Image 1 (cartoon, rainbow, N blue to C red):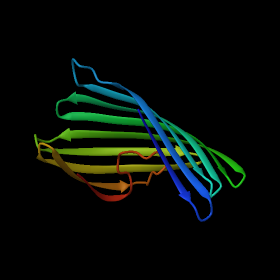
Image 2 (image 1 turned 90 degrees about the horizontal axis):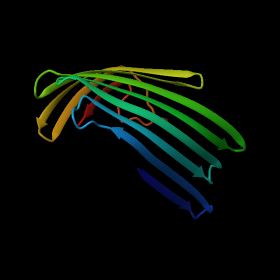
Image 3 (image 1 turned 60 degrees about the vertical axis):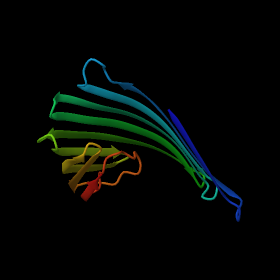
Amino acid sequence: ASNNIRLRVNRQIDAKHLENSLKFGLAYRPVDHNRLNALLRYEFNLDRDAEQAKYTAAHVLSSHANYQFKPYWVLSGRYAFRWANTELAGFNYHSQTHLLYARNTLDISDRFNTSLAASTRWGDGSQRTMFGLEAGAILSPQVWVSLGYNLIGFEDKVLNTDEYMARGVYLRL
């Protein structure tokens, strides 16, 4: 569990901006085998900006899982749901966003792997899709680098995933 609070004060106009992010989760990692790992996570985000007269409260529930079919083959997946309420200049807006993500990783050798990934995000009348390829190498026991390319993609500031989903080339270290 974690709780991050940030308060910024603009003394010139006597306005405060409060951001709060509370996270906690449950993990499943069996000790007798390492084939299935799962995580269920809840996140509450609060953003109160007096200068912009904006208030947003958002709840995010996500599930993450990895399944290792063989020592060289792992399938990863994620589903996330975000419900938010935003008040801006006297107007109240509710939104719902869903994210579905899958990744298939194959180890080609002890040092090299390759992945295919796909994702879709939808809600409030819009939908975005991502599809990409990635190749990685272990440079030393603690250093892994990969180069990937998403043929189609989207930027996700709403659900803030750990994955790179924008269209184009990316490098991970």
